[in-house]
Image 1: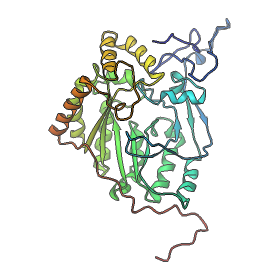
Image 2: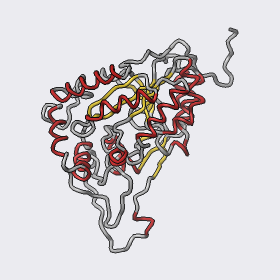
Image 3: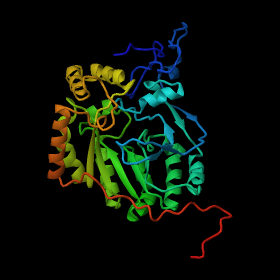
Image 4: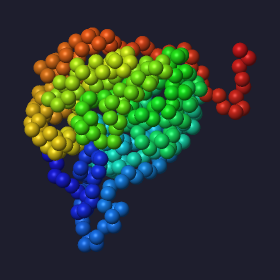
Length: 362
């Protein structure tokens, strides 16, 4: 585990956050250490609060060539995520911004206004070839700051207007705000939504995902989206061996009852800075299970905290991975859930229209 660092002053308070440390990012040439100057902090300075900065995007889409995921392009309206999930595999990306994957990841956020306008230009390019775009695969587009910045709403309006296929992953309730746009896309075969749910235990969820909606609220999201005709996949992500894997059966029963059509699972992933952060969390919140959880994680990754090998990183390998897969498959069949959802339509796409464009005669 990492030493408690680094940029927390004596008297500073952390409330409803996943991480409780802020270790310097791996690319920094020096470690920054907070020093007490002897002056008492004002009360409003003691509590670590969320800060939002602005980045003007030069591109809207990111591409990948990973064989482990079913899409080659994604959009990220925000960097960092206020939900504060301690297990989030995206935490190390904050190091590229000269910020900490610890508290900075969930308190020093980046909004990207103008991303919808940039996206319009990219979709109008003659070289653009349509395929499903994924949103929410890195950080959640419906995290709390979306209520003010509305960047996801703007991106969604662009994709809806040009009939572009879209896959959304979220645990944020703000998605319900956009049902007016999502439901017509779903009716055309252009949309599917993945709702991430880790546990049915509200206390455990509060500790793991301190600013995310409760499990009961996420089940309600599944119901509301399904009632609107939007196909929903429940994503057990991550399954934490030795901690949440006993919940596979009740989780799948609950999401099926709520209206999910399909379900999937991903093993806990602990890349780079995520591993020491998660081990600190285990020691603080479930010390009696910490050794068991890490032993099973390492047995699933060849003795390491994490291995990024393609074909293995999402599920791991070995006895615990096999047992989780078998239990998941049995519960999936028992609850009438699918593994896969139908492919989205690419045939309806038409590049965005702008003022001055020549209109079609047909």
